[in-house]
Image (cartoon, rainbow, N blue to C red; front, side):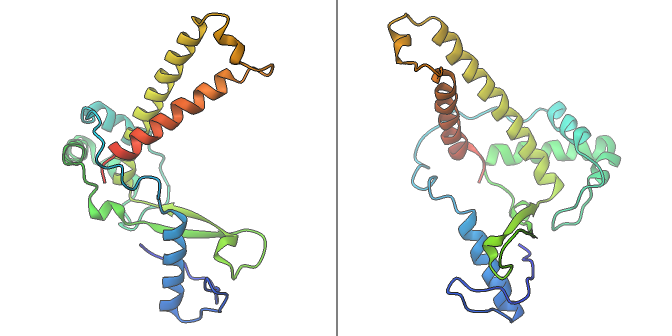
Length: 205
């Protein structure tokens, strides 16, 4: 990962950090703490049904819908290159996505990212007073968007199924719903929590 430079940021103990190596270490530690996923630990033993690999048409659609003139990731490969590559790039990208899907491991090169800090209000020596955005490679975004689309479809399907079952419930079951009608939002949250757990265990690492 590449780390942004902020003039004399403060360490976690409140001391000013001035040397470039120390600045990088400070941002590294801050971002790792910020994005650390403690909830997913210890769940790898659960088994989930393997999804079918991405279709070539899904890869083609994702590349076609990728916006142009966007910032590149650490590899500095622009989205325009994927679009200009035509069938050759599409076929190669599809093979890569299928291989990653079947192996279940994200390529190390695709895990690299560039963090960009955008200052907010307050003391700008505090890392917490910056909003961080992450730039990843466009090839990594291609597979991520395919996964996101599958999550969206499954989420909408699950919510629709629960709503359909809810409509068939008897009157005495509906008494659990308060005056504001919280059954639908509660059902949605329940479905999303279940999907989140499944996604965390299923996605390639």
